Length: 165
Image 1 (cartoon, rainbow, N blue to C red):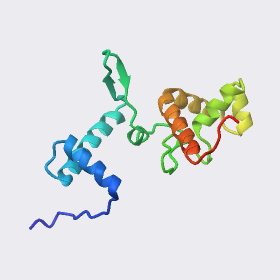
Image 2 (cartoon, one colour):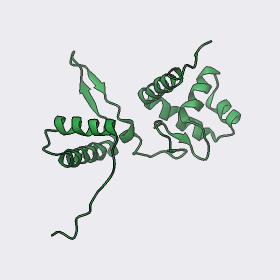
Image 3 (cartoon, rainbow, N blue to C red):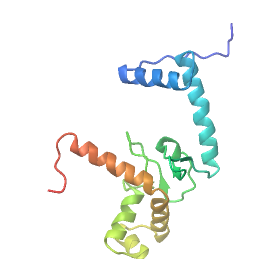
Image 4 (cartoon, rainbow, N blue to C red):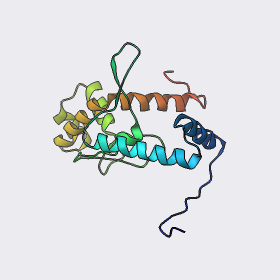
């Protein structure tokens, strides 16, 4: 018997069980355990590449390069001074450190109000360097920002909130 083995035990609901079975089939794994181990190795390999600054891409039907966004992996790499992660059930954008303020909000408000970085910094009581970093982050992560805006819209529409009224 191996004493260095650690037992993993957790409950899954029906949707999670279906996801695990789909992963098992896709990864051609004989068991759910094997599928989970293969998936973990795959995620670790991708994360290792992303940490070096590489981006994940694929070719579409026309042979054009398309960036693939995996928010759960994209946010693991941090070289930001003024930005940080905040726990959120589904949002993966970075926030201004010490504030409940998304970097993209600083950027989009600045653009909407036709402000300079200096004016935006003064309005938000932030260092100019923090605003410049928020701009850079937002422009580099437009796909994530758009994806999360769409998710937020869907979450508002689902319970019957009327938008644009």
